[in-house]
Length: 136
Image (cartoon, rainbow, N blue to C red; front, side, top):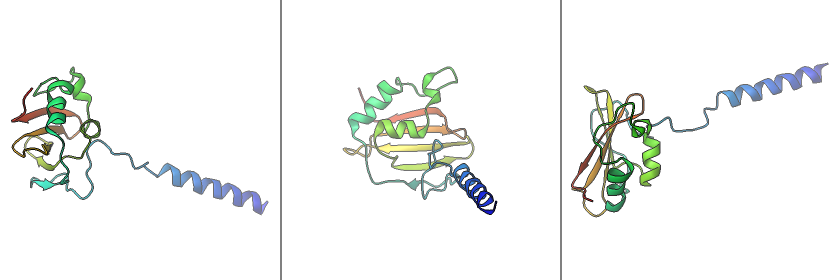
């Protein structure tokens, strides 16, 4: 009887540990070591995307659009989706409190005057994009 109770308790403990695990999955925009509500510009990574990738991301993947509404397929994209597409984390992050959104900016490896800024709402979904000195 004691062995049965011990086995049941051990099984319950295992289940409770796996239920609380969280899986380590990125919830759309969390960046390690970054204060997601800070209005200060914070460096995320020194890694840079290529100008070619930033151009393709804005003009093709995002359709060259600056604003996204619920009906646009791009409005379903998260930071994790864009990071995967671009291949590196953003260069900088800043929170815009007045608009309740995070601004993730990627600078081009070839020229820091060329960048792509993506604006994600507090729900983690893409709401706007800004391309600076990018061209087709």
